[in-house]
Length: 183
Image (cartoon, rainbow, N blue to C red; front, side, top):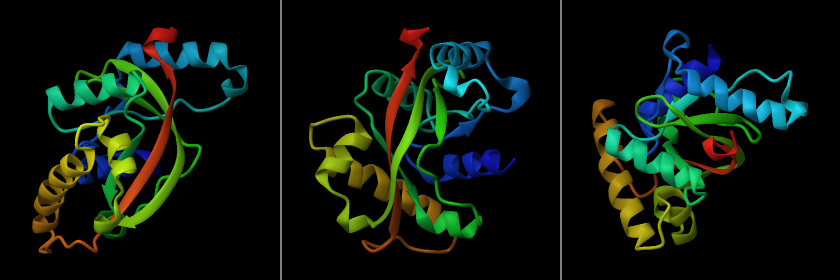
């Protein structure tokens, strides 16, 4: 339940990480198939609980694009607003946590594993990090700043707050460890 709460929270906080948790009754069969294929190839994971299945972004186009970038290994990071972790009293993501990434319809596309988590002021987000998060080398920092500023502004407005260059961003670096192509 702790992870479901966290994932629901994360869906609210991140523009391209607007994650929708798929409830147990709605889990697409491909989620089980992808996890089972991963476990079959990695017996050390046989006793592990299946990770949560979520998609990035809050639109079909965005979720499907980011799932494809994750499958192709171009998207390697995601961002959230630290203020909301505090507001909802949820723990920050942990290194080693796995997550199943789906498309907007809930079809499993990849399994990722968190490799690093940092909390960084908005103004200090680097071009390198933005490139990993946006999955592009074409003006990644400019695109990252615009997309996240706009989204964080809307989220903070609902909390009666204004964004600043000093607001803290939870930055997750991840590795795509299994994809639908491996099944």
